[in-house]
Image (cartoon, rainbow, N blue to C red; front, side):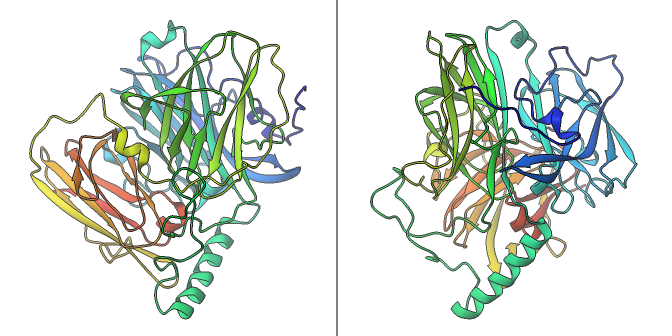
Length: 483
């Protein structure tokens, strides 16, 4: 059938278009002036209703930014949102004063203010940008940030960049307040934190259905919709592709509080990079996808006209969103917003299989930290027994190999993100292995994950859970270099 066009309001019209998010012309040339990125308000349509959101875009309407490796990140960030904000360049390795964390690297930008950023881009990859101010990320204050190799311009490979979001018509502050009240009630009834181990119904087994596994608490927030390119499956984004074409999916989980399974359905793909960093190719049709992570998946399309949906299924649930890859004459069928069977919880099945193509040079750790994850009644989330602002920084010294072991003593999984560095996953539940190099790793409920990185970017860096409401509940510390 022919897809209807959304009647977005005002500035939302530019964001509703499904084709490439990026212009074909190169950006950020060495001698070029700074590219302006405007933080703006917009209106999108979700389930037939208008909803307020944000955008980060260039003056010509381009959402986000595309650059080439070896160039400089010259950006003027212009705050036109009518309220304070600040943008973090997730996955990039900037000087710490340009990292975009209010109160840590720089003050938030007041309405009408701007700030200029200028640092090198030594590594290609799929990155993204998002607000690190209060709860703005829940309202889609995020955009892609893709750094390509120069050779990609001539490669016979089509980029398809897609961002996933979880969406609520409620104000994020209302959601957070409700979480606190519900957690207090749960603590009063159980005599412990609001999410004790074993809370909730048994969840599906890792195969997606069948025998129950030990229960964990998967979801804090119930959402009205899940979005891919700002759209639901009742009117999905359609990316036009060639018959028999080669496609590189660059998928970004920009959800505030939702882990997904990527389901290629009729297609099979090769996962070639996570969080922008190459891994040994991993074949499959379903991939675990935690909050804030990115997946680069190569597809070889059939040599025939057609349309192929790609789904993102909420973990532990049958709800899903997605988009469509379609040839010029491909027939696009109506898509169901639910799967037949609930998806399994996102765990570390994929993580255990990944091996980096850019591993750290083997050497013993010079310093080791243990970070214990706990919670208190009232929706208080802590690292090493303290909330952000009362925390003791994790000290490192320039040149050290550092290991951090995350120990989760809660019933929820936590996507842990370290700013300013890439790290390698080197152990799960105490079993060592040389895994992926990335910037965000999921620590399962009751589990342990160890990462290693080289301390080579002096400064004061945020280390936090990327579940937005856990971070707002206090779950952030800092890694700070000794002088």
